[in-house]
Image 1 (cartoon, rainbow, N blue to C red):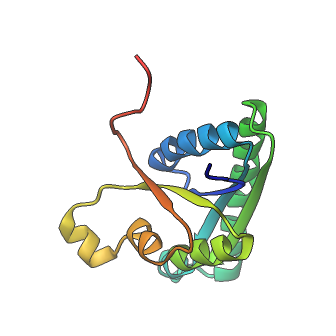
Image 2: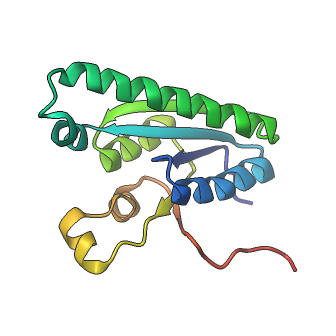
Length: 154
C-alpha cells in the first residue's frame, strides 16, 4: 500500500487554491498525514507592484504579515475540520522554486495544488507555477482544476 505521511498544499489564497485544499484535506484525513500548508510571497511580483512606493521593505513586511495571518487562519479552520496535524510555511521568493525546495526538504510524499486554467497565450507569457512544479517535483503532484469533475459517490 502507498504510504502518504506528508502532503504539501501550496496556496495563493485564491478560490482555485481553496478548492485544491479540499482534496488536500481529504487525503490528509484518509491517510492520517501531516498537511503542510504553504504560501510564497512572490518577490518579482512585489518588486513590480511596490516599486513606485516609498517603502518597499514596509510593503514586503506587510505582505508577509498578511500572508502569515491568512495561513494561520486556514490552518485553524482545517484543524477544526478534523485534520490532525497542519503545519504552515511562509517563504519569500519564486513560487515554483520554493514549492519544490520545501517538498525536498520535508521529504513530501504528495503535492496537491491548483491550476488556474490560463489561456495558452497567458501561460506562454507568464508561465505556469503548477506546470513547473509537475516537471521538477521530487514526488507525485496532483493538480486540481476548478471547476472540475469531482470524485464524489452518488
